[in-house]
Length: 490
Image (tube, rainbow, N blue to C red; front, side, top):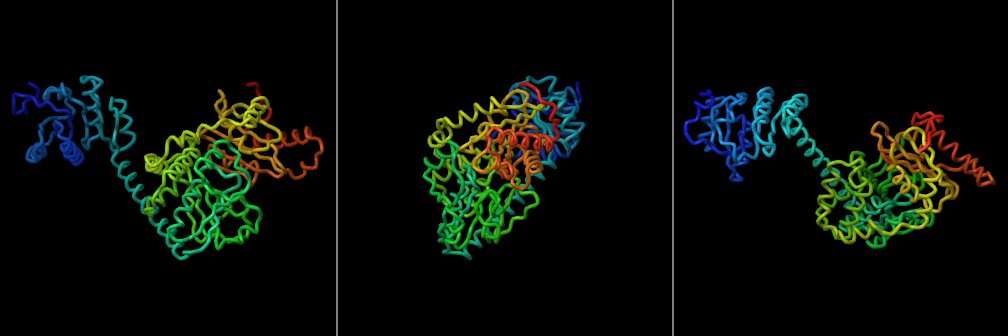
């Protein structure tokens, strides 16, 4: 008779749904939690004292060596749902996983515990479907709690600033040609200011040109004021920058204008933001995520329209949670999802594409130049700069392409939009290196606005287009480290 079988005190074998191998601190804690669900549990451990303690606690505990290949014989496995190897011995857990993997059907899940990622890989190779690494779990839990402490601390500081400025007028300034993340974040900030009797207006410059952005503003009826000139800022007691941080950089605020509040998630290289209150978190995917946290912390009611706006803002800035997304973005979206109007969200997401967008997309496809996995396209003169990122997103889906740059001329500037799915490239850094301080962005999405300068004197449009194209292509390829002679057909 197998030694493990001698330890069974009853002829009738236990028939567990969950079999826990190792009754130490973690195994015992898991067994206690499972017992609350009234599941059939059996715990096996090699330590007699531990087994006796488990029995005194009312558990079905058996004495046995979890590395024994015949261990499965001491239980009836017909109802088995999961085997959990949770001892503190990595090698024992690995052997237990391999042994049970060989005898139980694939429908029975095998999970295990490992002390580090190296042992985790060994257990996965042995057949574990999931491996828990307690040090990583503990560190993640602590980090999330520290993040919560930081969020509360920053939120309290914002509330304190508003309390000290109760009753003032506040101009909330967006970056030029604002997107849903910026607009929804400003919308949320106006709701927060109401709690402190602060009258706030949302101010923007440029155009809201993207067809989705227009639908977003119209359907949600978000009030916004177009900036007519620098004198408009004198109408407010204080200003807030939302989804941007530096006066005069991609916004109409004078460079020397004092700022009361800055809330942003972008980095600006060597430029140093300055304000009475600042919350710049480059570790989240959207400014709307930051504002959602404020709303939760300050217990401010979130209307269906505001929830819909913020959710759309997070989704667009993270490219539907595929770009620069963090657990904070998912948590904010989870909070907003049940509060949102999903019929309205569908209308915002699926407006008809404008004729101009189709024309620019056609130009981008026709004028594309490919250098290895980098695609650049000059679309000529444009009336709406929001058509550029749409074209870049479309071209990035082409086979063999990992980086796309689309550019065109509007008024006295060259506008550049870039997209990237090569994890080795930080596109924002590349754009800054290529085009200076008026360029930047995220690892996978970036843009630039370049003054035409001396090029503007060119009277012939074709010559101007060629000069612009040569300059943009050369500077970008040099910054990303691609040989200009490597052009190929695609």
